[in-house]
Length: 338
Image 1 (cartoon, rainbow, N blue to C red):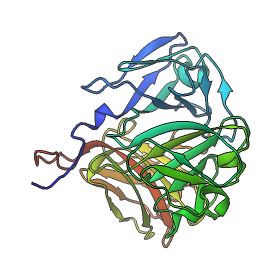
Image 2: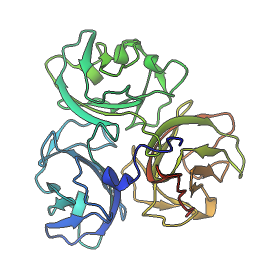
Image 3: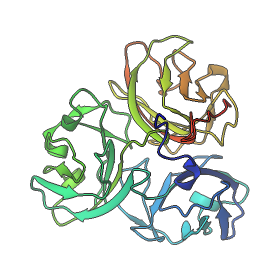
Image 4: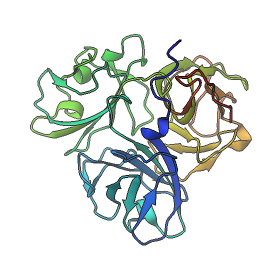
């Protein structure tokens, strides 16, 4: 029998959670049928302008990053206060729990089985390799300097035909840029990745944070596509019904557009947040941005208002996607469309 997926239940490794703030600290339980203890939590207030809040189990509960700025580690004990066996706890901070405001959290569990590794290292500003624990080649790496104002530097294996020579910045709208100072023009392997002398990824004597993913069939996909400028845009095959998709125009400027399966529970998927911006959630329903399907996603517009730019003719885009359900499970049973 064909191997359709390595993960029958994606909820064990990734879940999306919505809630409304109360202003008082409390526990938040994930919605999945299976318990999942997250190691990486990314929260965005949907109601109004507010920074993205990123916390992980390596840097402790009192330390957070903001994806929309280049800021270093930020100490704040009022945001995520605990990583629990099936969710997390929030404090009284407005980034996570302002009374009556609405929030979304994207939650990952660290696991080689699911192709996700987190690590921290001390930079030395020399060309070097650093070990990871994926036991597979990383297809996506996001590096952040923990102690200085440096960009969120991203490696994506489909970002041009020579991705080891390029980088993208998750807190900016910039197009991809060519530089040997990030990845030392060297592809990662199943045991190590390479960094060069840029302070963004290897600042001398400074702590660096790296989040690494490797594709897992039926669970995650990190690919690229070329826009066609049509209201019937490209159909992107993932091999699963997505729970989370982030799209960035890599050949030119554009926002890091984030869609998920909880803010829109049926098509069209129109509620937009941007990793690089602190803006409130926008509803682009009149522009019909995209649909989630049983095996991927389909672009539905030639362009959108503002700088979303998810289907401009001839433009190249990279994406990262995680599953709600595999298209076909390991027993050969297909999933339903939304």
